[in-house]
Length: 155
Image (cartoon, rainbow, N blue to C red; front, side, top):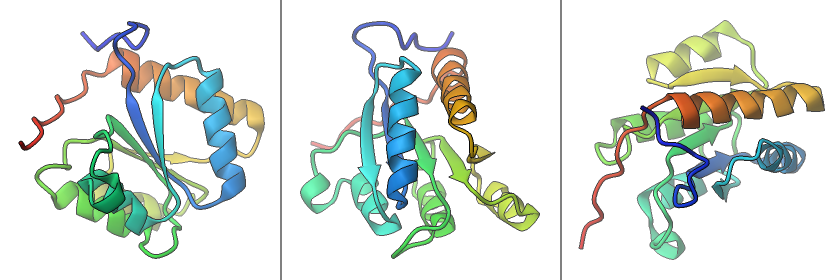
């Protein structure tokens, strides 16, 4: 049985990797409207995402995300590079990575699945469609799916 996101003690941590400010604000709003009590970490480029995930520098005390929402077209490190690094790092590879991109190109979809993305979602254009997608993510990833346990932190 999946962990119940409505339980008061459970607040999933989501890492949203998005460089477009409008898309970032939209995602924040629809995640809030989806009524999922969560903690949202935000990375504006691929390098920052990896520092957060690896808890480097100013992110040394960052929580390990339960789920990553990853855009592909990012500055400083492309989303496909971030995905490859996550899925080849033994301490990160179990974190589900959902690609959230404007791309519908078959080559992007194939490359992401080849790199072990957990799913590929095309960003909706309409607000209502984006809100519906957030509800689907909440219901599937936090109500239906049994997420892997977080690794014990090194002392």
